[in-house]
Image 1 (cartoon, rainbow, N blue to C red):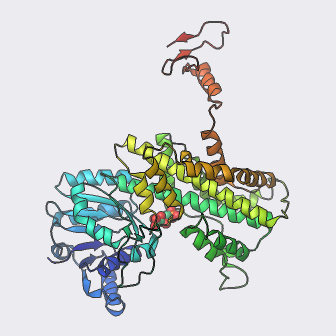
Image 2 (image 1 turned 120 degrees about the vertical axis):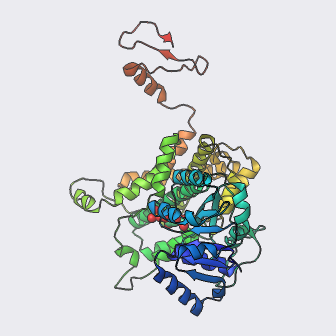
Image 3 (image 1 turned 135 degrees about the vertical axis):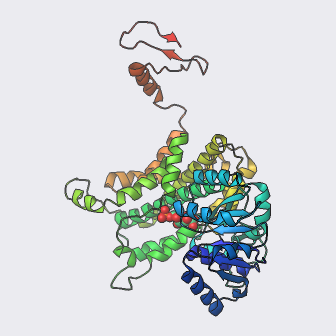
Length: 500
Ligand code: 6PG
């Protein structure tokens, strides 16, 4: 037993993470349910990968397990859900006390809590680790969000820190330039212990919820430029390229600029114009929205992004409805430069709200689930490697460094000012979208959140009266201490209210 670590599941993410680990000088045993896949992968590595000698393939689980140093660290990169349980159940009989299973899939965090508990009862450790960054991230440096016991983390930490993306601590910028066999040296590692049991997968889930809204906002900005200014895909792509040089600089803006300028290799025009407008989803955004509903956290923009995907899938219905339901005729705007700048501001302000919602949700969660999350650190490990990596995240880390108990990101002086500066344009863009009948649910939801949050008074007074009227649900009074509840016999005006 000489391997530093083992890995099960050789789909693309598994293969790439295994190679990343091998590149960093660790010896790694790999196993896949289908042995043919293992054989092919090892053969491919021997031909093409400088660190192939660090990898060893196994075709049976018992010898795979025996090949790993104790306490064994075994990473699972199998399909989230029942496949994870099947793999764990197959693996457990071969393990010994203190061995550590690490689930790197997009598991539902409540499943992670259950698995951790079940394995703890068997004397085994379980780390649920968020892994973000897609295929390239896994290969050259992902963002890693592990949780479990501190003891288990102590064993995994050196490898996890080594293989994660690196950020220059001086500039806060991700360090690029990794190539097979040549890992990045130095820099701040985008792997940080998140907390016990399901905390890591929870934080990864919120990352994905934010990913959904970040993507939806970008799509709406694109749609407004296309429909209000009649711009071609490549022209809009150039705008995104330009935006990527400023405060919006991020991976998602960068790839959007690239996507929009790509010609259709199979014909005329741009590829994006040929792609069917029906969005897929694997569920993590939906979990985030559902959890926000469960915790009563007002993440309406994140939910709007999930619903926008759902609406997009009703393609046939929408095509039919477009011939029946009427809207205004779009009036093309003439001041292109000014409107593009307004859309940029609207995007930035909405993005601030979206992140504020994600962090607000995590804050609620840490109270509800008894975790202690470090938000500055979470923003920092999202700075490199992951899908939502962005310059902007440094501002979030700075905000929590200034005030670790910050109630809402929008209240940090930098963000307050950015929202104030951008809001006139933001309102103008939302107004134009509404007036022209262009769907912009994420922009609208973010603005409603902003306006709702900054309102000292809301019409919930009337709502409470309605509830009390039909269901004697009681209400509090503005002129009495909080926590004292009253009921009025509404259908009988003049009858005294009474304290409950
Ligand atoms: C990441 C991504 C990755 C993936 C999600 C979302 O952080 O690397 O979030 O996990 O893109 O599965 O995918 P869907 O859009 O299909 O839900």
